[in-house]
Amino acid sequence: MPMLSVSNLEHTYPNGHKALKGISFDVEQGEFLVVIGLSGSGKSTLLRCLNRLIEPTSGTIRFEGADVTHIQGADLRKHRAQIGMIFQHFNLIPRHSVEQNVLYGTLGTAVTLAPLFGRFSESAKQQANDALRIVGIAEKKSVRADSLSGGQQQRVAIARALMQNPKLLLADEPVASLDPATSHSVMQYLERINKEMNTTVICNLHFLSLVRRYATRVIALRGGEIVFNGSPADITDEWFRHIYGEDAIEVEIR
Ligand code: ADP
Image (cartoon, rainbow, N blue to C red; front, side, top):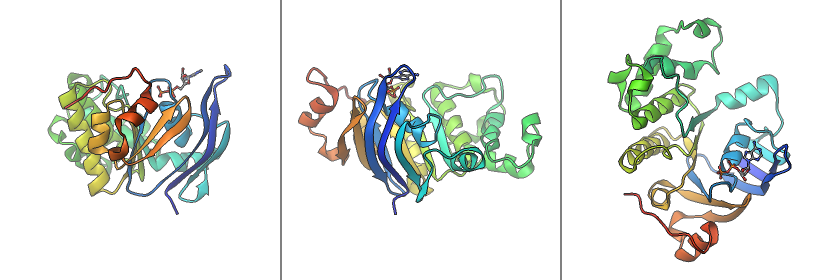
């Protein structure tokens, strides 16, 4: 049984725009799946349907065999608790410390209200410390989040997601605001988490050189439809033009 099974997924925005037009694919446990495609092709909409930040219009999403397409309430909270998400702009609370930001990753799974008032257990603090160590910035735990570089902030956001012990990590353009050198550093941490903790990753990326380096499989979207589903090694020049258009030129990021 695949970890995730998406079948005929459609999403139409309230203004009538069809962003996803019948998407079907499976994801196996342990994959590092990268979603590519031009800006506006539906990548972000797809990721947000998976953790139900966006409500699918039709189709089915199954996670570990269970139909999660329209679940609500406690079932939806349980589903979201298993899925970490990181964003292009990190979404940290700038004036709060690195450690606090990481601890906020427990809010989705907390059993008491104490964390809402900034009171976290010693075990949560220990877990935050461990998560920060995994992304190599444990020594920064007391500084304000906004005093860090972009790459460091994204690593804090990854640590925050790790607090959920996620089975699946969604990353929506995680390196789009970063410079090339920093991009690799962030991608390498995602790769380590994928390989060493066996966390399945689904990641939207722009640069094909990053895709070739980190993806175990690639899905390409064009106009809300899947036009490629396969190995990164199989994205030939011809496929590149099919995915990105005849006028597109590949830009290398090293
Ligand atoms: P990508 O992540 O590939 O850039 P998106 O999923 O953000 O693509 O968007 C897919 C399409 O849906 C785009 O054409 C975009 O303009 C449109 N879209 C995104 N959000 C909305 C919205 N809230 N209302 C209407 N259209 C939207």
